[in-house]
Length: 253
Image (cartoon, rainbow, N blue to C red; front, side):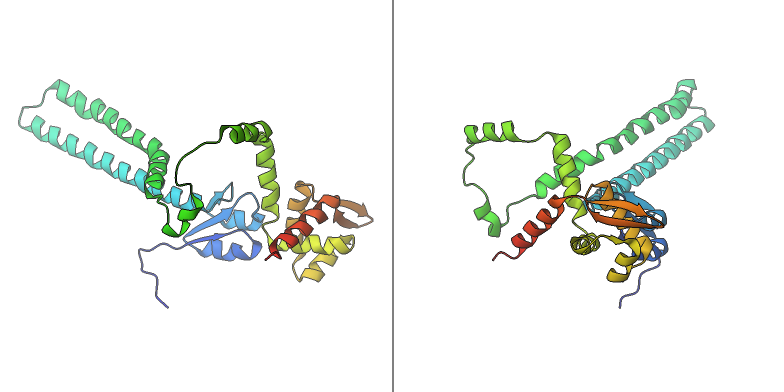
């Protein structure tokens, strides 16, 4: 197994309770903020609030560009000041040169630093340049660009608003974790408490409670208290329908 070099940094991405120890030991721990566990978020150095791993490469690009700009400003400022100090020592520099070496260098450094604000746009331009059609995917694209205006008009009239689309996307994110799917399958059979779920799924109660909190926030499960126990059940029949249709879809040839 290759050994990590001394100057190399190790980054780890995780979202579960079991990832917390590795996140804390890694040089850079990255946790998912929306659906990640509290333990993983606390142990991580960086939290992705929208759970998009593609943002990692974007963050690396932006940070490298910022560091590059910082070094440029350091070398430029020190170089100009040393130059004018030498000119002043031999009696060539005047008051205006001194002002430029102080205020002028500061203004130029700030203007150079503004380039960091355009890092995201440069990433998008680079992505467009690199986006070439794979020969194997040629049959997925039109040979000529011909817009069907009547179809576009119908789509624009029936398309839900951005808020509804966002809520729908967040709902389907919840189904992207196998533990939460297992919990829902258990709730298909009966109303159970956290202790029952932990025993049935061989998990800790804290891990089950975290997943139940996410399911309850998205109105997929509901709870009721009976004495010292809290029992959970499906919020409505829609949950069963969504899972059933998903199973039917993946079982199709």
